[in-house]
Length: 246
Ligand code: NAD
Image (cartoon, rainbow, N blue to C red):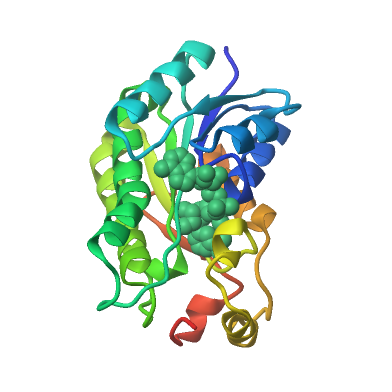
């Protein structure tokens, strides 16, 4: 039997790179998808068992090409991790339509397009989908009209995938991370927001990329064989507090 293959989007850094390493540690082959060529090549260099595929998940023909390239290299897809995302902090009145579209294109359209292209391969493997949302998709704030809306839509898209594809043995779940010190988060988290998160999170700290990757890997493994249609907040308990986002 050929080795199991995970396809991870946004794999050049942050949570996607940690997820790649977690699957490799378990003996999987990993297709690392990203649109940032230098970062992707640097990240894939020296990672035995992983191969890079340069593609933008938000562009329809690139979404189908990245699946074709993955299948040409590995012959199968057992886990699809829709992780590529962009951040944007903006309120309702000041978020221009170009900013709104930029967020939706990657965070929502990308998940739709890549999953659609991967579905025949996932049916063949009875594979698993994990979509990366955010606690911003579970809670509103004064700052996240595009980002929060895109992530709430990803949570609903996950439910659709779970309900529709379950009869093919495909499971679909969502991970909603709390704050993690990646390039994406640090570009928008001010010192005030960082301090407010530390106070608000019951564990009083940001999460690590590895802590998110561990849950993603679990959801794709046979240990989660009866789990589908769920959103798991990996957030140090923030969601349990019931308070608003900083
Ligand atoms: P990151 O910026 O470190 O990494 C994101 C990667 O995605 C980058 O390598 C980037 O080049 C790639 N990417 C972006 N748009 C792409 C596209 N259209 N096509 C292909 N690749 C693309 O970010 P991260 O913090 O690791 O975020 C990963 C996911 O986790 C995102 O969906 C993000 O919204 C989510 N998330 C992050 C946090 C956090 O605090 N870091 C919290 C909640 C959710």
